[in-house]
Image 1 (cartoon, rainbow, N blue to C red):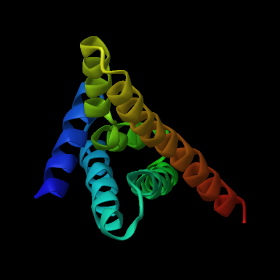
Image 2: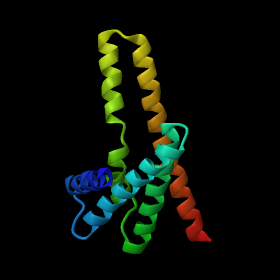
Image 3: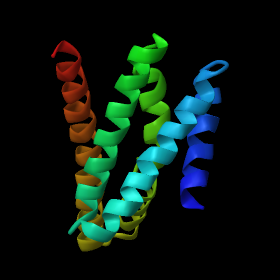
Image 4: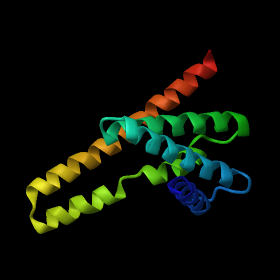
Length: 137
């Protein structure tokens, strides 16, 4: 059920970001794919950062593949599909701990959030690089 909600969230953001017509379901499918990879690897991975990293690679490869097939920029699908992975809750709880004066909690939650954000960024960079290199070969 979580995969469906992730796809719905990605599709909704596709509408907000002015993605038109037949491209909306593809953007939504990317969000569902990313969440499915995240959910599957969470069981097997040692840390959540690894799960976010692998999900981001899958989304980047998916977006680059669709960009080539549908003649649209990869960011059309990439940005929408990454929305379910964004650590918004971590950012909120980091700020809430900071406002309470809980330095240890702020650092713990903030580091976890930055780890997730870095894993997402690295996954997108590596996934896009892999896709572009494979196009050249």
